[in-house]
Length: 362
Image (tube, rainbow, N blue to C red; front, top):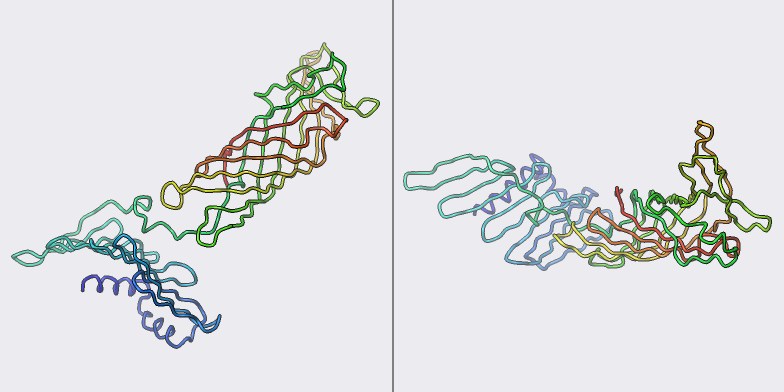
């Protein structure tokens, strides 16, 4: 009887003095918004006749000795009530979390951080109010929000380290071999993945899906030698030595690409439904938006900074394989170029790769 009383109080707290009006409108279909009631102990279902009429749906499941009742309005939970052998827990709109528990001669009613103890003793009934620790949603599965649609891990701000693999300088004389050697510790990649679109591939779950979107990728290739780049007479990219009188602080090649990923992502729930290990793999296409070389140096005691904007025979379209793995917002990625840094026969054959970490997720 007390359990039914608490459930009734919950409804009154949510709907207030208009509670009866809401019930009447559900019966007469005079409103055109959706009210959804789900109960975990009945298998009956009622179907709505039209899209614009009010829907009342009663749905039942049982798990681990608990019965769950939900009231939804406009697809949002207004009341969630779980009844178990120990008592009742409820989440009621903006009021928060309410608990009801019977323990021998004591009835405990908990609202947020306050607990009301009603004690039936030999000498009458006593009421005692005490402070308790508020419920922690991470400690109580009932208060975890309803499972949402598939959400991938692409959008965010990333940084990584660039390098080259599978180097081939066969078109160059021996003295020019390895002129693209990098200072990898200073050859940084900066990615701003600003747009993400997710496509779930499951009906009942949200752990597998496709991820695409848009991003910007800045790649800095810091030369290990005091050289920069230029186009030779046959348009073959060539190194040229920097004046030996200059005190060079840095010399690098920078490229900017607009990127579009297509990744297949798998997620493994670790704790409830919100904390997951995620793994993805796929391809990332890139369209070159710009490129330049930059030399920063001192000459005759004066600081100089020279920039040369050109395409430097870099591939206009770039294709890379990418893998990503992480836990929650922590994410590592590795990218390997599939069609080389330079256009075919216009520069050394170099397959660029990047290894990095996501610093901020969106």
